[in-house]
Length: 255
Image 1 (cartoon, rainbow, N blue to C red):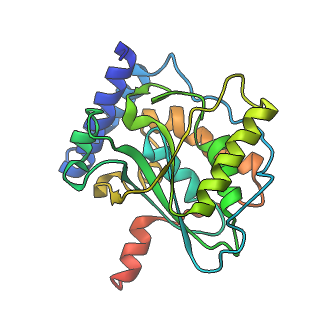
Image 2: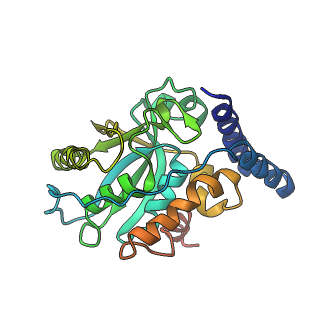
């Protein structure tokens, strides 16, 4: 792990912890600026305009469906899909490991088998699984980075599609083959396509992080550009008001 990556990771974790401890705003803001300084030599990759999947084996789905994607830090991935028409909810969490190790501090070691992931609940009558895949590969992350995304390194930041049925598996695998054949990226896609064992929601302070902490240096540098790419490349799918986890929870509680 490089020095820049180590600093970025520690700062991300510390800033998230500040959000839960009620420390002074000034201290949180200072740490956010520090995170920006620590990653000033890096920037998120520009989105890639890619063709839609030629085949979607999930096209006959009728009821609400779920998709689970991993593509680096879940803050940005969640933020992107929360702004897609037809997405009912997008929850940050962990997939690939066991329940006992589904905790941020443990996942951060890279030894749990988990990947930072996002569980997307969507209405297939409004947005297809194929479109979600296109956004995932184009905007949400760089599928050619192996076990890393930008400054974050380790298998917990790997690119992975956790399929829930055979139709999702076939659609994802065929799409990866299609994109590789078209050479839309300079090197081959390294995204794993694996069965979803179980998904575990992340701690509350990780939910809606992009929306709640736009002042964070990490968010501003690596994640907010993704929202602009989504708006530019997918104007028909983009929605300005995100489907926030906190808003849904408050509505359920009658607040």
